[in-house]
Image (cartoon, rainbow, N blue to C red; front, top):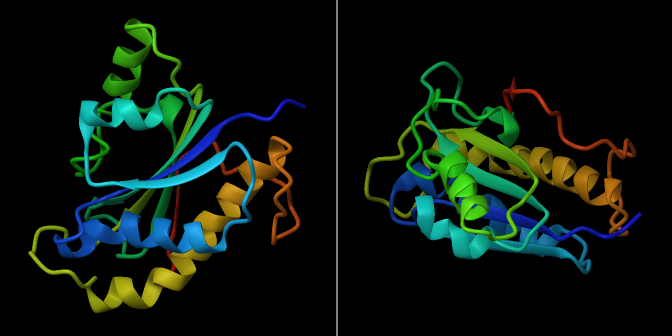
Length: 183
């Protein structure tokens, strides 16, 4: 099995309270994921078309970002298959335009990821200027990191990157939308 290039990309704004949760999760993943050729972990404060430079050239893309649906508890992790992206069902300035950004990249001839998995983390307060997560999200952060890490490790193992799956399943993240409370 050939090794594919995988990008794990955390998005957020580090001065907008819970909007920074994708950055917090990505920083933990960077420390905890096994080092493996073909796997890159990045974070970005950018959104929309500005992400083209980050994602071009990767075969697979994992996005970690804050969402606010108002229909789930803060700390719930929504797992979405990027191929199923339609009109946005929740508010996130980073998720809006991901489909369009990928389509534009393909239209102008860039090598764009063929598979996109999105971990949308339900948040309580993404609009207050603050560098700290809300207490509820801060307490859920270790469980969120574990859930996202298990999915990323499954994806990595499925493509022969030599990483191990702590749950022992070897499964890739679910292709359909799921919402699992983490607190």
